[in-house]
Structure formats: C-alpha cells, structure tokens
Amino acid sequence: MSKKQMNHGGVFGLVFLGALLLLSGCASVSNPDAKMLSHAAKTGAGGAAQVQGVKLSYRLASERLTLREPVILSFTASNESGQARSLDLGQDRKANFLFTVKLPDGKTIQLPQLRREGISVPGQVSLEPGQVYTQRLLLNEWYEFSEPGAYEITARLVTSQAANSSDAASDSPEFRARLEIAPLDKGRLKETCSSLLKQITGAGSYSDAAEAALALSYVKDPVAIPFLEKALSSGKMVEPVAISGLERIDGQEAERVLAATAEAGQDEDVKELSKAALERLKMRRGGKAKPSPSNM
Image 1 (cartoon, rainbow, N blue to C red):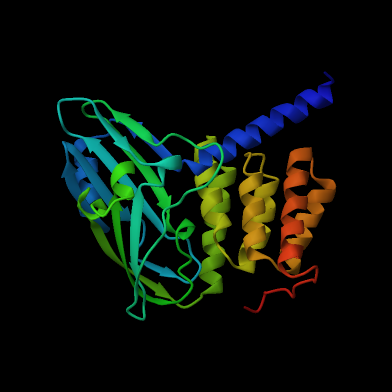
Image 2: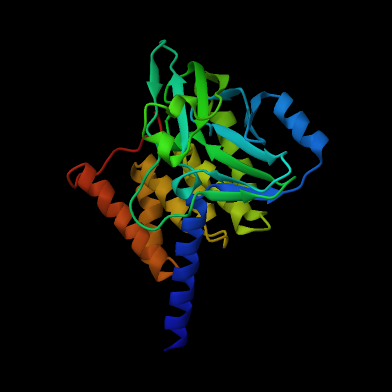
C-alpha cells in the first residue's frame, strides 16, 4: 500500500468515525460537585425529576434567541442511588427523546423521533453510583424554529419499548420551558457564528469541535457561509458537518464553497462529500442554479 493510500484511508476512517461520534451527541460522564449540579437544575429554563434513583435534568442554554440561532437543550442524568443504573437513550443516544413544540400561533406539534438507517451509536448509558452523564441536544435537528415568536417546548425521555406504545407519556416526567425567538438580527447571528468558529478552532478535543460545528451547521443563513468555509480548513475533522451546513443553506455562495472544496480540497473523501452535496442541490432544483439568498 502506498503512502498516499495509507493517508487517504486514515483520513477516511477519522472522518467516518468523527461523523458517527457526532451523531451520538456531545456527551460526557463524570462525578461533578453536587452543588454545581443542583445549581444547574435550578437556574435558567430547566427542571429535574427522579426516575429509579436517577435524576433527569433539562436546561435550555438560552430562553431568548433571535431567528436562526441554534436552540440547545442540556440533558443531565445523575445516579443518586446506591446501585449501578442504566439509561437507554435510543439510536445515536437521541432517538428516545420525545419533543413537543407549541408554536407561536398556538398550534402544538409532536416532533418525530430521530431515526436513520445504517451504523449507529448504541443508546445504552451505564452510570455507577454518583456518576453524572451530560449531553447537549441541538433541537434544530428535530425542528427548524423558522418563525419568530413565543414557543413552548416539552421534552421527555422514553425507553425503546415505551417509545412505540401508547404508554410513552408515563415513562418519565416531562420537562417544559418557554422560548422567545426575536426577529432576524444579522449582526447578532454573525456574532454567534464567530463564537462557534472560535470554539471549533480552539477546541482541545474532537467532541468539543464537533459540538460547535454541529450548531454552526444548523445556522440556516448565508451569514454562516464564511464561518463554515473556515471550519472546512480548521483541521478539526469537522468537514462532513460543515458540508452538510452549506448544503442546508444552499444558494450561489454556498455552491461556490462546495465547488472549491470539491476541486481543490486536500482530502479525496472530503472532495467526494462536496461533489455529492452539489449534485443533490442540482437535483432539487432540476439542474438550475439558485439565486443567492443573501437578502432573505
């Protein structure tokens, strides 16, 4: 095997593994100070409940956002029992979270569970007595939040069995919070993107870079394009995520970045991902170019 083939295979493996880890959500298991955990459960838009000796807590990162900013919900499970416990979070550690959203017009919708075909991360999380599991859930993966106004979000964790039955509602207590989304503010959105890019480039681990990259990739606005372009060359192995973000934004500028990456990218797999994204964009509009959405 040539050096080029070895490098190519190694990068492909890292890109694939990185994307797979990202799908599992950015999570960690630790033994934090009990006062800090209690404080986190009581501040912000949060709530906690006990389930078989495990305290489940949720907290919105921010209750007030502007249109197209990432909506992030922190989930914490703390084993306060004297025995080892296990949680089943579902496929990719996301599928067993059920969300309901009350829209600004008063309509309430049940969001579909996140499921996909192919290889996935097991959802089982084991906790020894005193251990704490934390995970940040990007709610934009479930719903776009495309209109300004007041939202009410309800979250619940269910087991694999309960998720497909009429008893799902009784599986664990609900978390409920209000979220205010103000009209689009390009200046604030740019600041958000800049902050996320700094988190990517300054990350000390793949999981930290992936968390910020995923949030940036769901900023569905042309403002995010130059930041996604820089993320592509950050060396943090978040190229697949950035490419997905550019594909979501669409438009001539996003196409330009994808085309440049497909033509002159340093890694063959990243080039192929960019080419595939371009092909999908063309298929969606019947081969016709789409005007730039810069004035959207």
